[in-house]
Length: 189
Image (cartoon, rainbow, N blue to C red; front, side):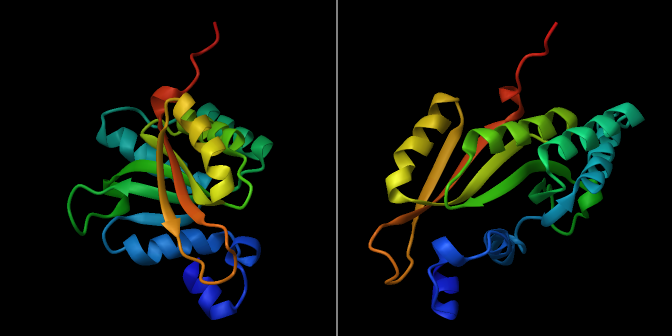
């Protein structure tokens, strides 16, 4: 965000496109951790099937893949902002790695519960993925509410100050809310 403010002369909190967040993270961590941005759900389903095969499980059936596509369509979700892989050793290709986390990035007002529910729905269908993460920048004045929501749901909450130069006197915080698939609601009987 600071880089965007410096280069553009604009307030990143108000003006920066949301996809800059995932591009920045990919730029800084992509040499250490395998990750993709703007990943389509069909590709995610293929990677999930690769993981199922490694675990000795059958691939998802046509009805399960249709359920994933239907759920995503109903949520207005065409792509995930980021997929992070569980790299066991260097130079391992994605198809040989497990899916560690699916991530959605937010800037400004977060719809934390809605985004969490979206990712939990994806986790229910992409059953080899361990975690969901909602991450992004928020104002200092919003942090207590978001942290309380995360902690009360049993999620792990991370935060770090972000410097935005002289645009705003208010502090900004980069936050991430991590939850695992055990947060999935129990099946209805």
